Image 1 (cartoon, one colour):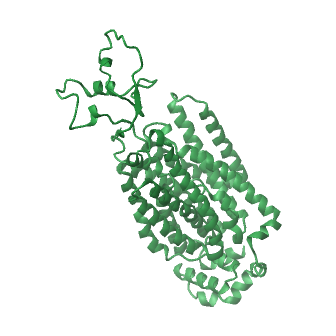
Image 2 (cartoon, one colour; image 1 turned 90 degrees about the horizontal axis):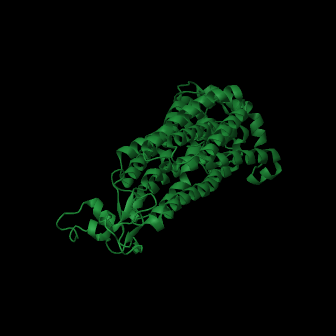
Image 3 (cartoon, rainbow, N blue to C red; image 1 turned 30 degrees about the vertical axis):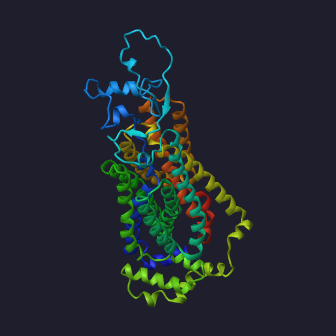
Amino acid sequence: MSFDELLDQVGGMGRFQIFQLVLFFIVNILTCPHIILENFTAAIPDHRCWVQILDNNTLSGNDNGTLSQDALLRISIPLDSNLKPQKCRRFIHPQWQLLHLNETITNTTEPDTEPCVDGWVYDQSSFPSTIITKWDLVCGSQSLRSVVQALFMTGSLLGTLIYSILSDCFGRKVVYLWCLLQLGIADTSAAFAPTFLIYCLLRFWAGTNITTIMHNSSSLVSEWTTTRWKTLGIIMILSSYSIGQMLLGGLAFAIRSWYTLHLALSIPLFVLFLPSRKLVESFRWLIVRNQLENGIKELRRVAHINGKKNTEEILTTEYVKSTIQKELDEIQIKTSVFQLLHAPKVIMRTSCLSFIRFANAVSFYGLVLNLQHLGSNIFLFQVLFGAIMLIARFISVWTLNYMGRRTNQILFAFLAGVSILVNTFLPQEMQTLRVVLATVGIGALSAANTGSALHQLELIPTIFRSSCLAPSRNQKPASC
């Protein structure tokens, strides 16, 4: 409790903590949507092969205008098993005999078809421009859409492993600012990517930064807040992720162009970078890194912001030393990540937390990154998911206080698992029930991860917090 005693002296929830919380809240609202941006920038519109008789304005086989567009489509594009035009094949030659279905057709052989060698025509009613239409990522190239998401997640894993160690070595604030600046540059540049390869590389670069931004904000809020206010602070940070999802649904509905949506979410990060420079490095981290003088300086700075007077007389070196003498004695021994090998309890905690968050992450991404499989109105689904996640986080506040961390995670993880398992065996025709179960699953995962986020901050020592949790942080922090 010695750190709490010092924070009480400077203000456990004063102007500085409120400024820090509001700033992180706004930054995370704009940061979280970058994880699921491909729900809209890589949405797959209805499409068919380009055919000369339909789409060549200068040369047409229907000069007299006697045939409708549906008739021309019927003789140019074969039908699939659902009697809808195929998306990836076309007739080599127009099949005029298909216009006379009531007449006897002597030739019963199947007409020859070919792939869409001249490109595709896309339905632009919902999305006038996506990366799918820009680089024709359909049919044989449709798997490349998943490549973008896979590269982003790979970047998230790599960035987590690298920046978690750097955060423990050089501080939360410095790494946070560096990652925030890089994310703004990467996704702003992605809007102007000339080729698909460059776009993938830029999204990979963006992925290396995003998890660290969100995790370090939680760490700084936790380490500058007393135990009394810590739960509220973390819940507010986690709630910003849900509001970010709702914001993305609204922005995507208003901004249908993929590169404009990229810019709308990326350029504000440069503006927010300026006030972020006013953040204060974690006092707890400075102490455990044996930087007592710098820690006292930052304490006095926070006390001044919070309106505390005579801080230099109260927060003397002797007073601070006496208050945290136990912590100072412990840090005299040099620590390293390899010391974890001699701490089986910490290893066990880390392993359990990593497994829980990995399982939740797989389930979460399976739902939130496949909105088009639930129905056509993905804008509404995105807002709905964000709203349910927000409600679930505040429900988890009650369960955390009255049931504890472990019971909270067990209860909501079980509920999420049942919802997803039942949804797996439902037919596509039962769309309403599938959406309801998916919504329940998203809410339960959010509540479970809220408890997991608080649990990890309380169980893992400050000096190893970022390094220990790196394996479990290759997901949205507490289900973005």
